[in-house]
Length: 178
Image 1 (cartoon, rainbow, N blue to C red):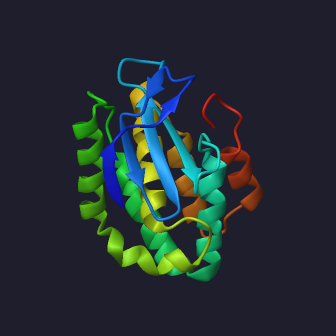
Image 2 (spheres, rainbow, N blue to C red):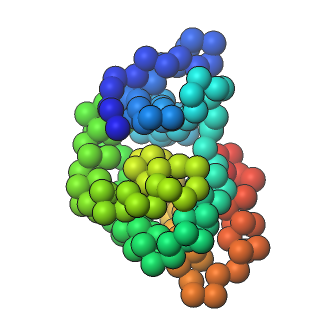
């Protein structure tokens, strides 16, 4: 992954990305949000296609595919992500340096390379998913200190007797940013 200063524009050129995370097939963009001073808006695109707003359902389906391929390693990955969720705090700044540090330090903490063998399952590689999920988690906590959806989805995915319908229903919640 390459981390670089934002160049992507949205909203008819009125908003410029703060930071961009560049992967082989995808780019994740982070923009200033409107909900609070440190709110962030996350977008991504694949290979020159249109920019999309990620929804929880996107990463959930991918995690379920990884679980089919290697359940034990995927659960270990989810436990690491759950720890990120439990320890992440609201942003006190959303500038380039803060967001870069958040992702780089998190990848070191969870030793992301140990999960690379999961990359053969699903659409997304684990590094892309980590960056996306870390940003979604901090976004939730920045805007609502009592946020719970992200954490609930991970808990449901880790249950031994997962209820796929409940997981999909929770992840597909039709809120402002899904």
